[in-house]
Image (tube, rainbow over all chains, first blue to last red):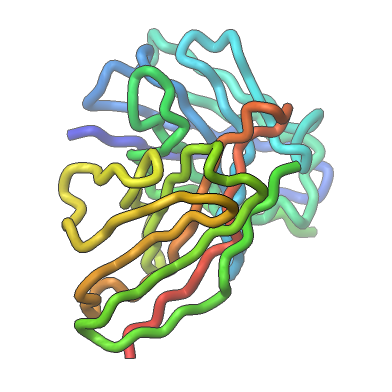
Length: 121
Length: 109
């Protein structure tokens, strides 16, 4: 079964840091581009970061650039999101999402269950 | 940055056809993907590349893309189709390329 499982969320104070992980299984992780998408409570989906299959190409949303860092370890079938200088507006459910096609469709066909990040004092 | 505009809500009676629009400047030049999200659940891809349907998605779901508007069409709407729907594109001309629309709440009357 193709599956993504996020972990690492929790409560953090403003200005703090968290590292999210996404464990992939059931597919050849190293062949697929990956993304992080978040959803603030009661709000819509927001794309926040992309990484190519090799890790050589990375993009960020303007709202997180300079504070968040995406990375992957293909040997461990894992995707990561290092989040620094967290703000209240970063409070959201964070999803990792797999590209639908090996050639980079930029559609996301498999999503994790999400991990909640709460930034509050 | 590229902006996608969706109506906040669409209502339809069971058995009828629902059409959810996604507006963007010359959106026909981009590939549009659509997601369904039910409360407390992760999104599900229902349409990719404007009108492609992933395996397991009913034929009742279809998509089109022309001019400045992409449309998700759900035929013979069922109660189980009630959900939030999001369109999404990839703007290759941007340094921040991933874009979602604001979402549309589909209510089945």
